[in-house]
Image (cartoon, rainbow, N blue to C red):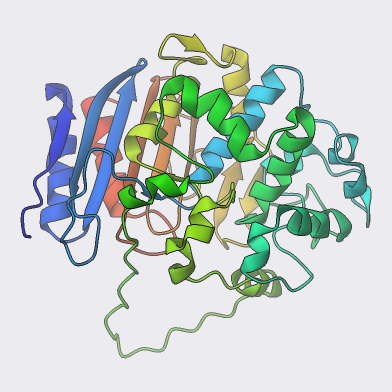
Length: 382
């Protein structure tokens, strides 16, 4: 099968985004992907195309979904923001108020905001764990509650690549009595009719796109030397989560709120209408305007101890600066391994999302950023 026709729509004003999307596919930068944009609560771009598998035998359909890795964290953050807006979760409170065992090993003063801003010192596990342990919620959360921080909490960010999902997710469970995936489904996904899942039912496996590994870079003739820190080694090897794991039923079905979410660009962008549109999406109010803007409160700024690059974190999202100079300072963003991306501009009332199956490196890249730039230009923001 060779046809990779782009389907969906883009309002005339945003035709340039469709051109970029088509180029990503025809150039081979993408194998299969989707892109969605909303403005003032309305979906103005919804595109999909290419193929859902490396063999190019299965077209990427309107309802194709894929593991978006850390873009899942934006859903985790939204759950916490909703609870905070209801007065059920206090970002300034110690975590131990909700989770008494968490106070162990010098963590009595760690705040909920430290978890949200990746500055709690719990970027990984000190005890060795296996991939299978990621499916054992009680084990991995208990280990985190018992261990000492890797650094003094609140002094710096160190990206909590996997642990943030368990840490914030456990607070959601203790506050609501529901697992993070269940709370997300009942309070956000189902009311919006959004096709995003944190814990994918087996009945939906047939719609999931195959993740395609990053191709090795061409030989340059020069040796690349990277000297990781102990923290970076810990997060990369304990456990060493490998790509084949992510295509298994166990991974898809588990609730791994920092990296295991499955959805498409439409679901990501339309869920984030909540934040982009003052708390209201599809005629339903989920948050107050103040509750949305709470996410903009700066929690940490400086070189991230895990990422090794400048980062500015608010409550659950990154803020403009560092490697993403968004046109509005009142923007929220994060993305996932391989390239998926979500950006929300609270001033322009826009949300953008890009997801794909061809992985292109650890962070987002020119494919998603090119689409977002085309939108910004059409909106007169750059």
